[in-house]
Image (cartoon, rainbow over all chains, first blue to last red; front, side):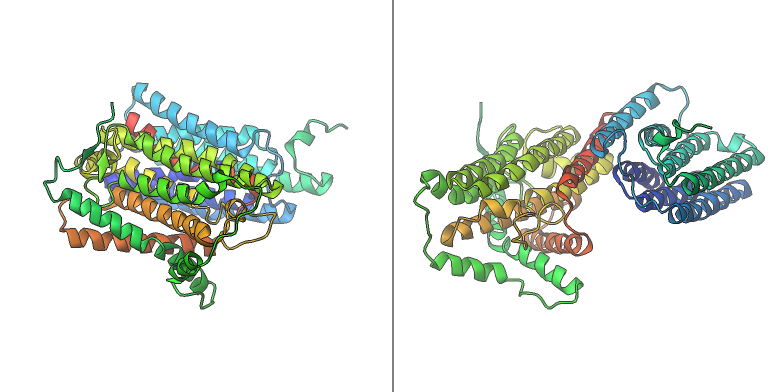
Length: 212
Length: 317
């Protein structure tokens, strides 16, 4: 079980880097969908298949993060007809290097933090790096849809962090968080779609120029 | 102080023979690797493709021909092809091809390995510039700019293995010593193996970095440099490239399959299988993705380097 959870967390980190390094939006969405699937598989692997709480969380996560949200994002890029990130504020190569720095930093921070990952010592570093890379994507990419992907990764990182406390947090809270994310991404997608329809562009840089 | 020592210390007296045998095997089988890659690519795209021993036939043909030298070239041009083979062969002697120990090993030979590859490339570049052709100048500029990215990647991989195995020689990093530490450092070592595969694609000028099949000026990188070489010189260059792939295949094999306790014949059979498998893997990559645009290549190589860095971070945590 230890090595399987280790492998899943490795793959989560790889999907982070895949999002960081790819310019195609569909590739980003595919990576974040895969990440959702991995996150869904993690609780049963870490805490065993026995409890209903764990299974429900796994099923809910996979349903929302690996199926519904990616499908919705795909719909959004089709409707807004954006295929790729054109000019990120920070290039792909520097952002990949930033990602490696983030990885090193999160391992360093995880060593200092008083919480332990409980079941896997890779859990907290993976959570931190997912949060940081999510932030990097959120800040440095120009297209609103990529920023949504970044937001989703940020939330995935928080979810990973939450896994350390899984058995102490009531199920309802987790479902609430999942619902929040779902609604958040949904609203962002709709907003992006409408902005695109009104202004023919979803570059976030143009949003600062909106005037009455 | 470099003390060249035949790596017989840990594995008994027959070790040099098994190292020598593996070297001979790699020298003989290496031209099969590009052939297997081309064949895999052809089969996956629904063509019959040239036979896997095509490179042997090409080499035989080229070796029987005479070489044509431009009057503007000097000894630097004539040296290039020989140097390419010689440096790659020398690099192969310090790699533990049999999975136990290399023919020659000394402290810090990992650096020698990286710079023997670098020296071969440097002399090849000199030879290309010696022709005085602006086209070759362009090719060398591309080749060198990518090589300057491959080298850090190689060093990250070597440093990671050095930390993992607590050794500074390739024999320690890839040979028997690594397997004593392997259970603890396995994730890092596997990451390095993947990183080495990416570096091999770049170093040996394969798709997605360069396309060995193309002769279109705009896209050529490695091919540009060797455009003026003919006959035996071209054969040497082609052979050096194949040999480099063989060496990288052996390096990757050493990281994932233990061959310490195996009989010599089994170890040799695994080595041949690994070379063929790496050829097939290269062919699989070539048929599944297109050559990257030139500005994208640094990202690809940096991705490979990032894998090695990830391995290093895991070790140092």
